[in-house]
Amino acid sequence: MFLYRKLGIEDAAAWLALRHEGAAVAPSGFLVTEAESRAMTVETASKVLAYGGLRGVFDEDVLIGFCGYRPQSMERTRHRAELGPFYVTPDFQGTGAAQAMMRGVLDEAKEGGVEQIELSVAPANTRAIAFYERQGYVQFGVLPDAIRDHGTSEDALLYRLKWSW
Image 1 (cartoon, helix red, strand yellow):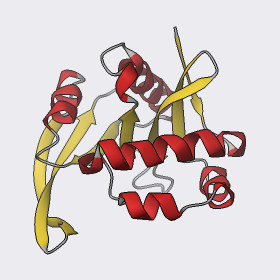
Image 2: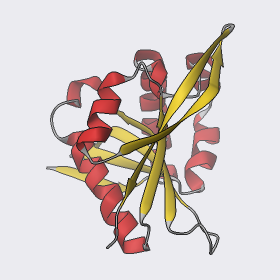
Image 3: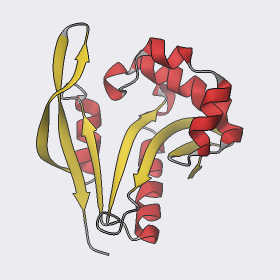
């Protein structure tokens, strides 16, 4: 059984290693480049985790996936949250780990009164798109010229999951 929880500074080294891996093996799933990821230190990673916007999925006590989860805090937007990046190490893809992490996010959203989760995904990231669509996310737009990489421009697909509790 997988465990979902908020990541803390004690998870900095494990999160940083998984972030390095993700930027290398799944670059379309990350805005950060592999070089930018590798430049981050454990000290900086601890500061990032201290903000509280990252969640993890664990197999026993080993971090095997993580996602950003950022609920909005202003009165007029607190019904919304942003999700991403969303990554599970390749050895655990297809095992239910991603589903456990998504379920954790949805349960946390429900507890917090969030009614809409939004994310963006690269059009080439077909596996992620299929996963999000299986979860009920629906594409609502395209962000043109969202990412530039070595002189090329790439759009981002915008998805949302909306419900009423």
